Image (cartoon, rainbow, N blue to C red):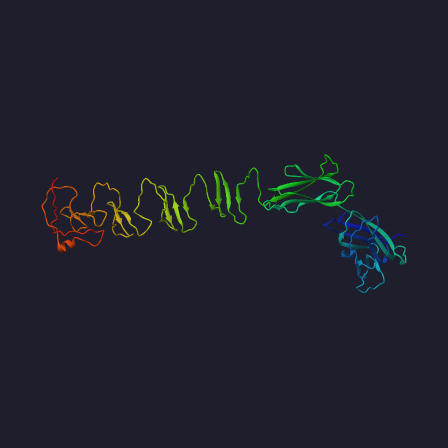
Length: 483
């Protein structure tokens, strides 16, 4: 005798996806229980068992983890609460009156034209494609013929189809961003039935990998992989799957793209500008070259250990610190400054070769040495880094139009020297101890005695750089004879 209640099954998704290795699949099954009679049906239990028959593929390997619930399509005030849960003792999901709450009757009632929905949600679908049978056992009575509650149950079988993918899927790289410099390799994986021929094409359309169908084996869904050298720039790979020996079939196509951390291009890159990642400086490719810009869009700074160029056009050149020296390029030439303002700086060089030098003064690198000041009438020699007149000018030969000097002496302090008093020229010898003799004959002149005593002492000085001066009252004629 058939069941008193009518059963219909709906799955979500419509065709349940069987789980694959490392790819669990979850689904939902709705069992709709209808009372097609015009009279009530009373029922003791409704079991949903998962039989393991040779012609059946198991729906789930872990039924205790399934979420089971029950709902009425119509609720009446006199309805007792129901429950639907996994019953380990009977190895099935059982619907019945709630065991946790008191009931007013022995058996549950389902009104005429009413229905129940038994929900099995979050089902971990078992592996393997095929038909999954559900055995529905019902113990009920009543209906249009008012059948007494039977001692045994009615049995109904319903089925669900589980499928495995018939085309490839999940074509992916292990890593989509690869560091070629670190020696990383590209690993591509995909899942698909072993009854198909597979090929991988690179960005040019060239076949770089072929994976033929497995001959003579039972159809199975498996994971494939291919390892190769990482590309040096962004590359899109295409997986093509065809039936074994498919020839010119179009087949199935999947694509995936990988990138290089630092891309390398064989024939250049066209772009209006290049920008940093953390630091937003830009290199802008202008019509006549390249411009370095800061994040605000103004001219930026380029830093290098060495710059080797044919020409540099610039307004200022400065050292790396704000207080360092700097060079400006006005229309008339070059100016050297230092610090934050336009304070003239110092030019240091092993040699300066110029057409002319305009300067206020010239001195040695030692600030305490002699120096030359260029005044309005000519040049003044100073010493010791101060304003004191300098002591000596050294030269192998001096060729001048005229000399204004207080005295002239040989290179040794004991040499003779010549003084130029107001009345003429006075020649002395031995550092000024007595009158000297001109080195060339002269006309006879009047004779006079040399100063003696205190006057002679007055002619001598202690310093080697300031010859003694004779007093104005002395007669200083030297006796000479004509040649």
